[in-house]
Length: 559
Image (cartoon, rainbow, N blue to C red; front, side):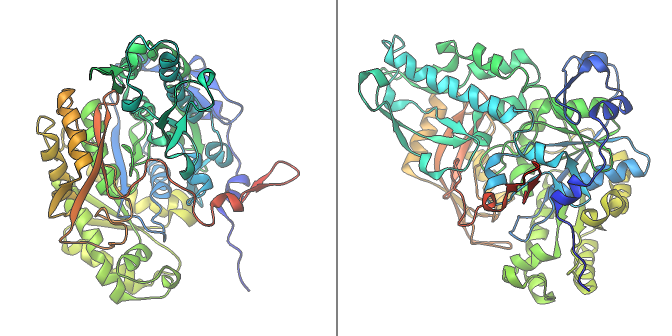
């Protein structure tokens, strides 16, 4: 008799949640520091920092992964399960995650709040609108876009050249038709025609700024530093020149406060900010991470996609700006994903294949090498699937032992925190020996080309970096604006260590091509865009939206 396995949303909807007020009380958050959004969601006021300023910070744990595949690795699920497990072994742990974007929710991935018995709830709310942060970021971004066009329409006293405006509009949805558009058509009453386009909200510089700012004044200053284009006489124009940053900050006042929810086991989860790691910095907000560290002994957070993307940016950008460093770093891998990297078709991954696993193991080995570049003690979380054979699991465990890397087989989807007790013990042990710093990959004072080459060669494994004519022209602007000392946030496909999504495993003898370079002066980094990566994704042939529905009682299904 076949046993029906419940879906993530069925598990979530059948759970018994505590009220968010109960969660807050258990973790020492006072009533006047909590701003309720119904019974199960709340925002935490930033005034909590003043009360907790003398409390020693907890230890930061980062969860990352091998190069992702369609087979799934379960990085967010492992993050949630590990947080639950740390509480089970007597440690006071909080989870800090990014907010889902409606683009992936309705596109390829579907819901993004963990899975099985290691997920955050209320799952439907978190995935659909949540507390409105994404909409506030969208509105703030588009207010600046409207202000630019309005200024030009009403006399253009700043002498802005419409042909050189780089600021785009955004929306929280995948819509490839909006990548390049013309605005202002239809006569003089509709503004001045010009070419522009849309990015997805998660890739907005406003999102990046929200995630890196530590207080409202810094938020406003960073928003004012947004580069929007040039005048006709080649002078740079910034958001502050349009007096837009004050109103943008006002729109973000509530969105700047972190969101409090819970896991299925009642572990607090602070969910805030949602930049993708393939086209942005891929980590949650600094204020959420630091708030978690003030409230707990351990904060378990994640960085988007593989170590080559989210984790590199977490350490080289977020940690450097915020003065943070992870005491333990967990790399999530699966038998299925490694077989896929070894050339086994997606439809056949449930079949045992030790030879495919051996061919794909190079991807895991490369990510371990990358972790060691930062002086990190690697911990491997081998996320078990029911189709995995003991031979396959034993092979990966032995590879890790040969590399003198600690490994734990986990089952967080099926068992929740109970399925990661061994991992939690290792993480806690490593964290107690936490160094007071980690290596950085590059010096911010290097040239942008040096920084990009270092990432490409050391992290990706490339032989060289090539620049298109457009990228070279863009780089000249970086130097002319005096932004060459900023860190770099590489936009690259998440599907490969290279910039070619077809090159699986551990590719070698490839060249990284920088197609263009975008400036994010408010966020405080530059964005080299490699390969064919787009900052506005498109929907797939069969988008996840086609499976999502709601019944007559308002119960959401298919998420």
